[in-house]
Image (cartoon, rainbow over all chains, first blue to last red; front, side, top):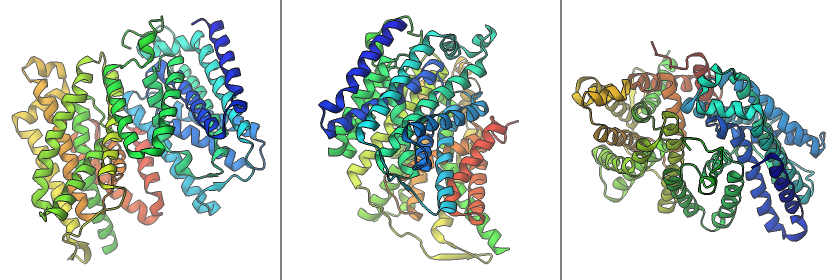
Length: 305
Length: 289
């Protein structure tokens, strides 16, 4: 996909989605919101992890940090600013953490990013209990649900746009180089450390901004809700099932997963997760390149995908 | 003085369980690069099997222990054959094996945990077994915790002995050092991989059976143990069973003392703090040479 075509598609898609509040009922709009949120999360996750083959489980940490920025700033920060601030805090955290742990690979990296998320969650829980005397926080003044929807849509669209640009630029090439062979990429003059930290922070920005934007949806937030590891796992699953080396794949599978989740989870909470687990196993075993590999035979297909 | 003794002892008891859980996971990872994130779910299955046997059939949990081990061993061989065999044999690189087996692990986690919810509901279950207390050197322990500790350490040491002194153990160690080299001298991967994977699940099941004698059980009980096991493995070094045993004790003691002197709600902060500190300072594990 050429950059220009990608942008035209993105613009058309976003405009069409932006019209949804006038067309859909409240319930369906909430469903659309969840689709858009997971699309944004999955695309921002693949931006770094899909290209580099690093398996980050820190999405929940970035998301939760963003949400807490909104909660802490409630009253003082206007909503739009809180979303940007949430993204920036998450990005700064990712850059700091990335500088420390991005030299680890494989399972080590997955485990430590997961551990970091939990560490942040438990630290915030402890801080709130010990110094603020609360467990959760109530967000009193929530914006209209349509405002939230448009904000989330804007962040998700920005994530897709960034992913499109990054893919075409030197940074994207560097990331893919790192993904196929990090040492070779370094030998060829890629500053792997800088590229990884930059991309990690960039992908965290969108996760944080989405967290900050979504926080007002809950009206009451506490660490178990916003740092829910399920958000992180779901993101990874969506991206990998869709095909983390592509952009359209994660978007398509985000819609699929969100619809499945919303419809089945309410009626058959346990059976739904059993099916989800089974589906995941079957997909990884028999379609390791993701849904996208069924359609795309493009130039970004990697030798091992 | 007796406070310190009591704390240290209860840390070691917790650590003994951690060690059993972690050794199983570590064997799987060290040998096959399978990071089985659903490890704790099989611990939960072991706990439920024991609970069922005790409440329905009135079987002594300790007598039932070998049955749990055998059932989970067979389940492990079957799961390896159904899921992981394909990944290990088709993946082009070690990193791909790790990523895919992690995802399959998540799938198994959802699958097994929610099947347990469907079967037994979300309620806490439990039974009393050897609950009377015993006094040792001025400190009091309930008898079941001591039994659990003895069995946990016994199992770990038995496994270490198998790894060190038997031909199979030698083959496993050889595979960990060099998969290709081991195959060249005639070690059969097709047999050894499923057996070790099954042994890992059997260990998880035994740990779960032991835990069910002391704590109440629920379908969600496994996950924290998976996380703890990951921490222990990193502490002790990937692929080192002895490291896992020592790492388990270390983490148990650190947690117990830390919780006593700070606050119980900091337990997870403490264990993750230890994990991250160790990963940053000694990525190859505390006991690596």
